[in-house]
Amino acid sequence: MTQIDFYILPDTTREARLDFACRLVETIYRKGYRLHVHVTDEDEAHFIDARLWDFRPDSYVPHGIVGGGLAEVPVTIDWREAPEPGIEAMLNLDPGIPEWFSRFERVAEIINQHQDVLAAKRECWQTYKRRGYPVKAHHLT
Image (tube, rainbow, N blue to C red; front, top):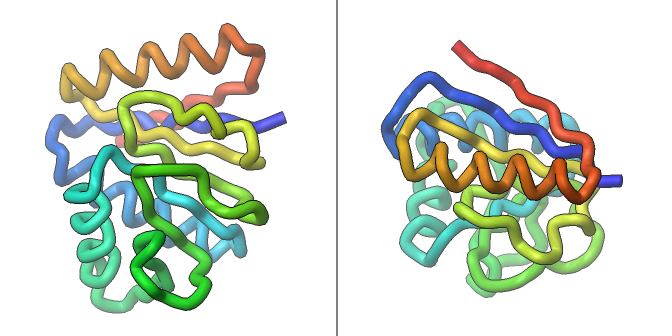
């Protein structure tokens, strides 16, 4: 069964949430998982793509936007559809839950203290719990 992890940040800004997303992507990649980053739209995909190049000067995470003509990479980014089989983890940055989330071993969700994010992710938490998925909270300071 898919394990759901919620990372709860004290910050309120979009930038803090997406910066943490980049650190989490790096951590998941370094643990050897193939990861899919599900985002809201094309603009957010390009933002995450660019941010992964420069969020830390000593870091490199091989990644790409799906359909961007890149060779296979361990970290994919998309907003449109489910990734190809074989990817073990998903970081969901979309306000909702994609229908195909259960194909992954792990799903990570990031909550910050922005009211729109809080409301959307509370609903996600309740949906996962209602469906019987194991949900774990990680409170970050």
